Length: 111
Length: 113
Image 1 (spheres, chains in turn green, yellow):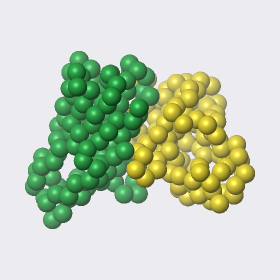
Image 2 (cartoon, each protein chain N blue to C red):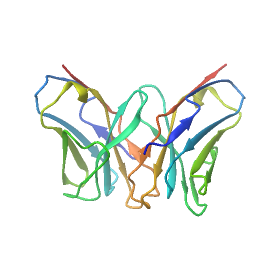
Image 3 (cartoon, rainbow over the protein chains, first blue to last red):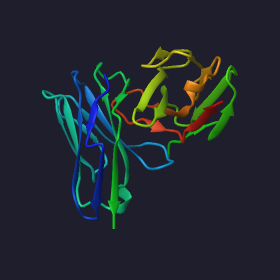
Image 4 (cartoon, rainbow over the protein chains, first blue to last red):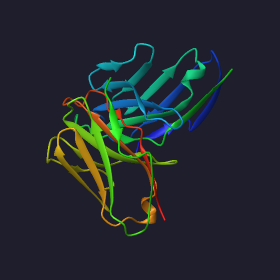
C-alpha cells in the first residue's frame, strides 16, 4: 500500500524550517527520500535503513521510527533551492529495491 | 556522474500503436526500473530488472512488457497503447545493493491520442 505523506503542500519563507512526514501501514525495511524539481528527474536525498543506518547528503536530516512505520524529513533554514516535490519511497520486503512511493509533498520557498 | 538517458523527452502516439521507450545507463548497474508518474499518485513501479534477461513485475504491470538484452539498456514496451497510458515515464538504475540510491533519467512524457 502506498505510504501517506503529510502535508501535501507547504509554503515557507527563506530561513524557515519544515518537516515532511511519511507513514506506512506496513512494516518497513527502509525509507528513501527524493526531491524532484519541476521538469527534472527525482534526485536522491537519503536512505534510512532498519537498524539505524542512514546514507545520504550531509545537509539533510531525517528520522525513521521502525515501530511506528514512519519517517520524517527535516528541512532547516530553508533556501530557495529547496523548492520542489519531495517523495518518500518505502521498501517493506527486505531490501528488494521495490519501492512504493508516496504521493509527494510540494514545498515552495519564497524570498 | 551516473547518467541515465531516455530515448525521447516527448512522444505522441495513436491508440493501438506499439510503443517502445528506451533507457540506457552508463554505470554498470545491475538493477533498472520503470516507473510512471501521474499527478497526485507519485511514482508507481511498472517493472524492474535485477540482471540481463531477468525481470519482475512491479505494482502496475498490466498493459506493459519489458526487455533487457544488455546490462546497460532496459526497454519498456506498450504492446497496444491506450489513452490511459498517457503519462510521464521515468527510468532508474541502482547498484546491486538496494540500500543505495536510485538514479533517475529525465523522463519521457507520452501522450496517446
